Length: 343
Image (tube, rainbow, N blue to C red):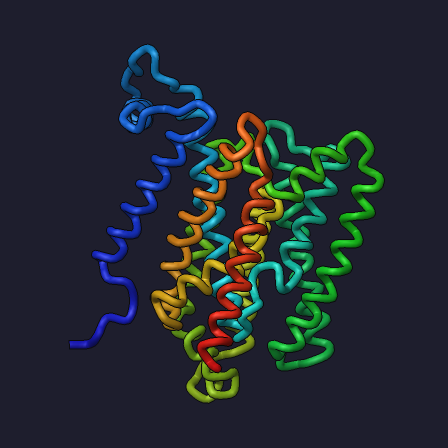
């Protein structure tokens, strides 16, 4: 019998149950604590259209916390999946969605929309989302065009170098836009630090659809990403269309990054650290690593969002601050441990 390479149904079920348990915990906890039993009852009755007993905090649980926590989980899963895919594709432990400058490009579009009040009638946050996605794709096209003009084979080193330079350029554009934002400066700066306040079920639906489509595309190339681990030349020799796989995965990653940035702002280190931590458990096989990274990223960002809400209650700490603080320390520990292990 052929050995199963990916997740077994049992592991999927256990991972889903853990994720669901963390979701319920994060919805229950906050500046106003709601008993877990009440939380489950409110969500269950609301979904089925049943009456909610008086005294239960339906508005807090169902309309404020639940969409926010769902968005946090979906964004965490998306960023972790993108990071794992980029690290496998580029064979670089420092790679994630921001390595290519895609996050920075999406930030330019979102900041422009916030600073100058661009919106779409009838769609809350639609202007920010649309511009972020457009600029994410435009950034990818610019980066790939420049990389292609310098290196026809689109080598990993060329793509990373162009991405780093573009990120620096994008950062200067964002700073310039902030300078002319006037009364929108506070909104723009808070958004740049990452924020999930005001998340809605519509945002969650958009994230879910985007993750389902782009995530399926990325997971489809698990075998090819395993082949990249032994080098592009070897991958090419066993029949992998290196350039095509790179282009498809990069487009899927840019779409996911554009949507997550437009809804959650700039949330760093999730796509960089979570795949590393997950790889320690699952190993380098992308058939296991990619789905495991999604579950791990979802749990991590939901807990990070909970921490950001309660640590300075009633004030809210930007979630990007939490992920950067935890992620930077964790990455240094992982790097130190790996180097010490080799020694």
